[in-house]
Image (cartoon, rainbow, N blue to C red; front, side):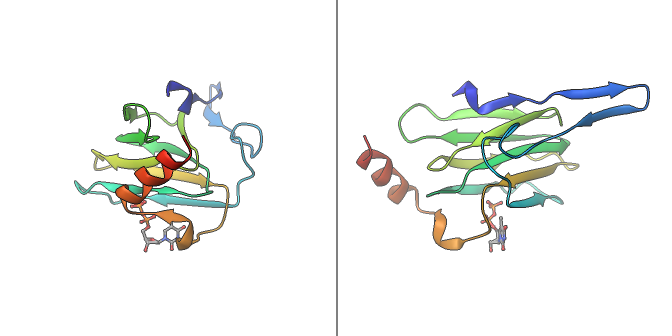
Length: 134
Ligand code: TYD
């Protein structure tokens, strides 16, 4: 599942560095929502999958560990510690975020507006649905 990790093009000059993310190009969906997590602590987050939503996660500052689990192969651990790297989280991908540094700023680009009914928050339900499509 290493294909979920994307190196982002950095445009650097003597003034610093810039990363541009374009919906439908850098990320494989039109971006409808942006949210970010900060003031994080030792409590892990996520622990859900989405029925339809696609997301792209970038750690703009600090670091964290993202676990991706498609319900079929072994879960993948990804360390995010650089703003030039992002993780694509497709729909039907169970994801968790752990090990936040105190300065962690985690930005998420999403393909749709917030919709609680798109969440699968019970791992057992996720397992049943992933088995059903195999
Ligand atoms: P949740 O998605 O459970 O957070 P995480 O995946 O980081 O553990 O969301 C936490 C709360 O915030 C929950 O009550 C839903 C709400 N929320 C919104 O209102 N809008 C949003 O765009 C998001 C992502 C969450």
